[in-house]
Image (cartoon, rainbow, N blue to C red; front, side, top):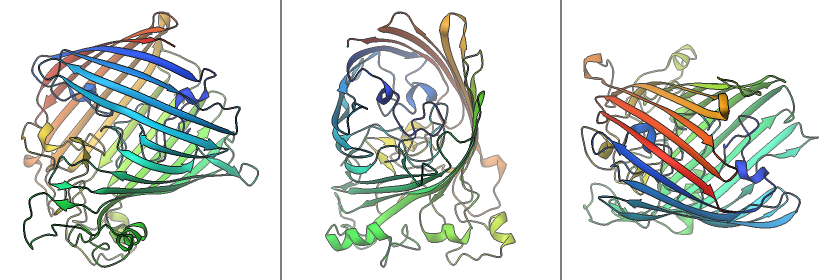
Length: 470
């Protein structure tokens, strides 16, 4: 997958530890979580790779060990294992990460469950990328691709390619379903250039598998999983895939995004503007749904200050093919499937876009079972309009801080006109303070608040101690 974990630039596509000289490491985290009710606030539980539960326990223990690639070696190997335990009313153990990999130059192959995100953007302060956000437990996969960008043409062009096969869990209505995932991104301009342009796409498909409780002929109870079906999934061809895979879901449910990014950097700051345009079928080419998606602006100052970075994101998913977008209207585009709804993250005849009970996409589109309204693994109110602000900085005594606030309106997918009286409004905010006490010991405190109609109102906090054993 395309890793958008950004270090020195907002599109670094590498994990922070990969740049360290210390290869082997072991650490333990101890967290205490609490709230004024039984629910952890949105910003405490979201974007945590499924390791913080929705209902709060009294404590969380996380043990992690592994080895990074040696940057001085052309051929090397890596592994990471992480276990997370929930202690409280409902005790549970999670194998929250476990993978082994090998590299040769800029290429690598790995197998297991690895933390990752998918898309172009700033992962440090985002509210979550549209398609693959790091909100759920890592999914088991076999993966091959480039490590970060592979530079060609005297470094003026960077290429990042990923290809993976994965396995969904069997917790929903279906079992033995597969994940097909691939991405291809380009960077135009040298990594050190003042200006960079990024273009790319990612493609996911949930395919194969069978229904646990057969429903008859209304929808398919079993989906083909042979090599012929895989070629259709890979290429997005064949009856029942495009243009309307949600209606005629013969081979797979497709989901992805077309991404665009623009970066400017100088000696003082880095600025990134990015756009993620989601698609579930070829209707994206009619530009009917082009106004759905995630738009972000991030600025990072290169010297630590009280405020050294901020991120503003606007998420909109209210079109869903139900009306002609402004750009589509200007270009006189037509949509042959209008006015059928592109029901984001929900799949007719299949499970939704989730893994181990948590949404794979942006957590802003809240799963029903995490809402006040209740429900299962679907996303009923997936027509959203959301504004998110993330700010971070450094206080005296080297205290790091980060604040987030998101204001969102929710509605059902439907044909306009919409009535504002039907919107569910939600505000979620948090602030986190972090201090490195010693070289091996760090402590952090996060306080978060939810107020609104989509998630339960709550006020909570999490205290975390992290100790590096090696």
